[in-house]
Image (cartoon, rainbow, N blue to C red; front, side, top):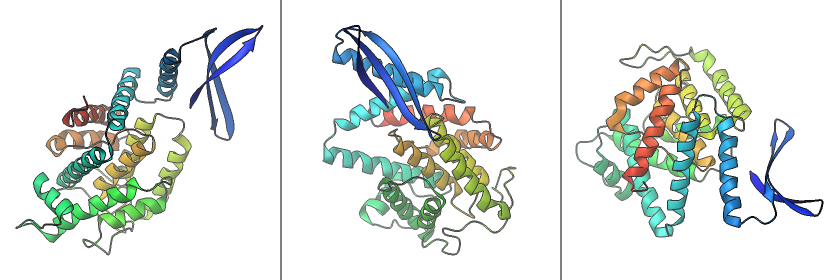
Length: 304
């Protein structure tokens, strides 16, 4: 966090912006001189935002400076729009967004429910004709997982991931819900290779360690996407890996006050192509894809 500080030197008012944060057990402090004498509040806020952007840009690993600037701009637009909504308007927006998110995430994994049918299931508790119980529970469970995540205030940990997975598979596959896989897995139509089941628990623990080590070191958008891709590359569960990976990505975005990302079913092939690249630790394509998707999300809700 950047704050404004005044220092009196030789009876003159000197203005500074200060970044002070505890990182890896040590306090890191950086100051930026912004002028002598009186400075308008509006100018200070403008300089603060510029300094904060530069600090975030320094933390990028794969993102370009231009991409960081766009992400921060989209975040600012989103936050400004949200603040203008009253409680009823925000609830209406959130419900519409979560409904579309549930529809798209399940459709990517093979559900035949349409957006309208998904809304009937999760908002009106109506079961559309000709749909399987699995598809109905997939919609209900995803909506419940979103609600749980929205109100979860702790950090990501192993138990949290297992809890979300148990919600996702409730009434669908109780035997595997909230449990790591015990057998090898393959994805139909893909030549991706996943770790053997005996390695899965330790790999998830390693991922949590990586997250805690890097959550203050790399840009939050980058952190969320890479965590999601590392998790899906482990493929820790028999079923639900794609949905869990996207939910974890959005949870990290939420914790850092960035807008959630709704990956569209209509762009499924582009998304999966980027995920396959990320399986080989090449994250450039998925980062670019998700920035474009975020921009499209905001346009769809007329925030842009």
